[in-house]
Structure formats: structure tokens, C-alpha cells
Amino acid sequence: MMMLNPPVPVMTRSEHEGRRKMERNVTEFPHLFFGPYIGEFGHEILNSGLVRKLAHSYQHVTVCSRAANEALYADFADKFVAHDIVCCGCCHGATPKTRPIPEALDAWRPTGDDTRIVAPTPVDTAYGVKTIRNWAEYITYGKVRPEYVGAIVIHARARPYTPARNWPLAQWHKFTRWLFSEGHCERVICIGTPEHALTVEGALDMRHAPLSEQMDVLRSARCAIGPSSGPMHLASLCRCPHLVWCGGEVSERTKTAGLYRHGWNPHDTFVRAFDCANWQPSFEAVVKQARAFLSEVPA
Image (cartoon, rainbow, N blue to C red; front, side, top):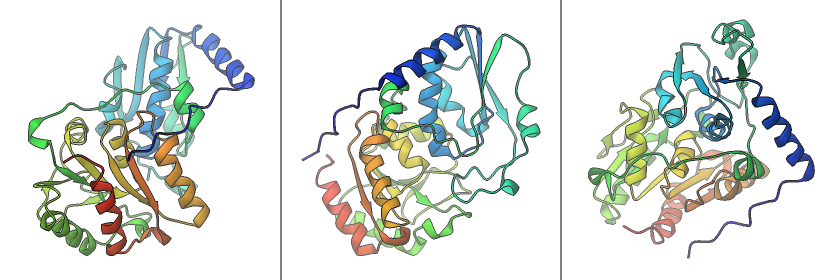
């Protein structure tokens, strides 16, 4: 049985006052400029909902981010500016050496008294249950395409700056063979980017596909499976059921798993999130979780 999420929390008086102050401020400027965004992809996905909500109060909206992420803002941004700022884009373990200097960011921002600039930081995490439910606005990304219906999507994370979170490729090969042998799907699709994700034997490699097409894959697929990552957040906003595992210290992984189920899930997409030590679940543990998860997700 799919469990319902807990009731949406109610904003406090101070939160209401802060929102009213924000709405008063935005009416003074006809233009909104958001960026340049250099943080983690998962954070950007969630923060895009805050920008979408703000956009209603402006005549013109410009977003500045990585070229590959334009599809996140296509429904409300009048203009998209692709920056070429070099940054690791990570929230954990980032240092001053891996972040651009403030002047490099300012060079991309407009000048003028008619523009309000929302300048996110490299570690911008301005979201939570209350923020997502009350202060942000999310759409369902992607469209259903027959050629992807019924597929199981895998994000075989392979980020270089936190390699301990990457599940070994040999395990992914073994897991994909299990999916086929058990008859859980006829097609497995790998998403992500070639630089930060792997492809698995027997799978359709779509890591080179534009983000808009990967959104269609997730919107159409039976489900997505992988460790905590930006594409797992994207799966939630594409209403794609997903199985995700979290690691780290006990308190961190328990908190993260809970956020996947409730706080980071504005569409109430079905998700099964489980904890594991040091981001490295055994093959048997993933199969056990996948078998239970797939029994609740229609083929």
C-alpha cells in the first residue's frame, strides 16, 4: 500500500510576515534576474520552484544557469542566459578553491534600478517542507512518450568529488541482469550526464540526451532507481516513482530518506527511500528493496 504523506504544515505568523514583505518588495521592480546558479543540480531543481513563484510578480524574468539546465525554467522565464562559470557545483565538501570569486558571478548580473536580482549561493539550500509546500510552485516536467513507457530508469551516479557515494559499476551490471531475469521490465534506460553517470550493460544510454528528453523518459517510465542525486529529485517532479538510497552518518541518512518521502516531494510522487551505511548497500539489500518497491509500482 502506498502511504500518504503527513499533513502540509501551516506557516507561522513570522513566515506570513516574511512572505508579505517579499511580495511588497518584488512589486518595486518590473524585471527579475535569477542567478547565476552554480550549485548542485538537485538543489537547483528544488529552488526553481521558488523562482517560479516569484515570477508571477514580474513583467520579465531572466534566469542564468548552466546551458544544459534551461528546460527547468522554460515554462516561465522570458530569457535564459547560459553561463560558462567553472564550479564543482557541489554542496558537500566545497571549498573557496572550488567556488568562483564573487566578481566572476557579478559579471553575469545586469545593472539598473528596474531589476531585482536574486543571487543564489553555491550551497543554496533554501528549501524544506514548509518552503516547498507554501512558498514554492512546481510543475510536472516531461510528457508521456510511448517508446519509454514501462522502462526502468537507472541513474548510476559517478561523481568524482564524492566517489564514496558511487555504487560500483559491477554492482549495476549485476542488478540490471536481475531486473531482466526477473521480468521486471523489457527496457532499462540510463540517464544523467556522461561526465557524472555511468551506463550499464543491456541498457539504453540516454546520458547524452538533452534534459527535456530525459524529463520525458522519467515522465513515461515505470520507475527510477539510484542513490540520492539530482536525477532522483527530477524523478519526483516528473511524477516518476523512484527507489533511492541514502548514506552518510546515521542521523544524516535517516533525515535524507525522510526528506525524499515528504519534504522534497511536492507532487507526492510514490517513493521508497532506505538507509545504508556509507552509501554502499549490498547487492542483496538493493534487490530486497527493489522487489518490495516494484511490487507496488504498476508494470
